[in-house]
Image (tube, rainbow, N blue to C red; front, side, top):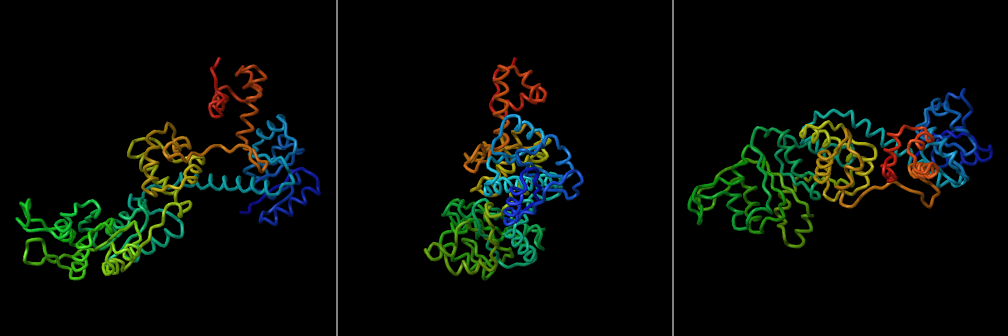
Length: 445
């Protein structure tokens, strides 16, 4: 993934060998020459075990590095404490393991990029309407969707919107309606799957008074009700085949004959249909009419699932956080980087709809001004994200190392938290917070 790496300490041969190997992987490297060095900023500092990071505070300030990785085959508590206080973020126990070092660099640079993106999201103004907000995203699939929508704004061509459940098919229909020349007319949405089979034709085409038992009054039908506006036909594959044939004729003729009525009635509605199944497969299986498919599929808009939209997920999450906080009157400004990683680590089978529900729940329950990882995880259906521990690459998270060190200090002082805080160089409030975080908290004095 590349990045600027500053290498400090170590043997000349060792440094040169690592510099060449990292260069081959796309990193830009430089060797620390002292305070006179003016080549910052860097993404990561690689500090060899013998290098006194703690005694070189200007190294980080001067280079502007955002993270430190210590390379040391023989770590001990003193070195760990010094590195932590200097801002170290990771540890590699084999300085010659290029793959382990590359993995550590990749992880840190990716984390910092994510933190920068989350920081930018916090400053994102939410003057965006709910419909437009659901279509947020910089991914290539969503750019194509928005380009198509812009071109269709004032078109009356029949549109077929396809995509998995929860991707926002009705949102697309509403966008076309709200931003087109029919925006002053009605927007009529109907789920074909929710209509009782014996009432489908009456609902769509209308009926005259007394046309059937229970028809105490005449009804215009959805097609006529949507005149001068938009008719959104959701879950179109659920429509009975007999009704499909009649709908095809109605769309072609632009007239409808209500049940029990001898005269036909004109209508002028923009038709937008939606399906979460492949209609070409349904045609092949004989459950959907081919001629109606061709009539509806004049322009097709495919909405990508959330898992194909990359970091669009974070933009959507921020939008939902702001709107949920405003609706509930809470001062929730955004999410932490850990919360962002939790969202990115989940597939969201329910797509944008599921993300919105997860965010609303997290905002409702959070006790912080930024939604945390812990606020999200309970709503992600078992897809919890845990802190990484030591792994086969020789890497260990600094949270793990810090937890071990705190536990060792507490053992040494026989559980005296005041003394432990003094030895760690932190106040007791900070110590208690770390104890809770690492599950080390017991009864307080």
